Image 1 (cartoon, rainbow, N blue to C red):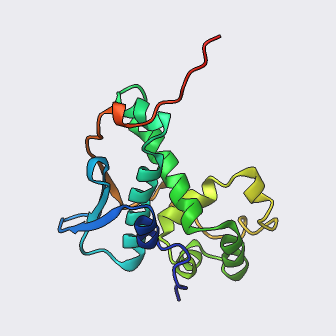
Image 2: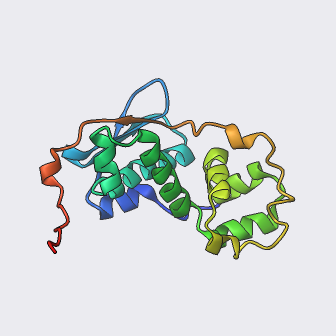
Length: 180
C-alpha cells in the first residue's frame, strides 16, 4: 500500500556529510552526535520508522548551529522547543503538501493516508496539526473534516531521541554584531 519514500533521509544524510550508524537497542532510538557528525539509530526498525528516525537525526544536524539549539544546550530553553522544531522539519520533508493533498483526496482514514505516504500515523498527525497557513490553502476545504483520526492527536511518536554533548559553542560560527 505504501508508495516509495519521497524523502530518503539516508540519502540526505550522505549529501550533508552525516554518517548513519546503527546500534542494537530495546526501543526505537535516535541520537545526533555532533562531534562525529553521526546519526545513530536502532538496528531493527521497519523501513518507515528507520527513515523517520534518520530524518529526525538529520533535522537535529540541520538545526544544530541555530541559536535556539545553542540556548537549549546552555539550559536557557527547554528541549521540547528544539524537539518541536525537529518534528516540524521532519514532517515537512517526509510529507510535502502536494503529496498530502493527494493522500487526503484518496483516503478517509489517517492510517490509510499514512500508509500511502510511507510515514507513521504520529508523524502524519503532527504534520496535519501544524500546517502553515500557506499550506492550508493547498488542502481542499472539507478534506481534513472527513478524515477519521479521532484519538491520534495524543499518540507519541515512538521515536526516543537522546541528546548527547555538542562540541564547544566556540566551534559554531557566531553572528557578527554591529556596534552603533
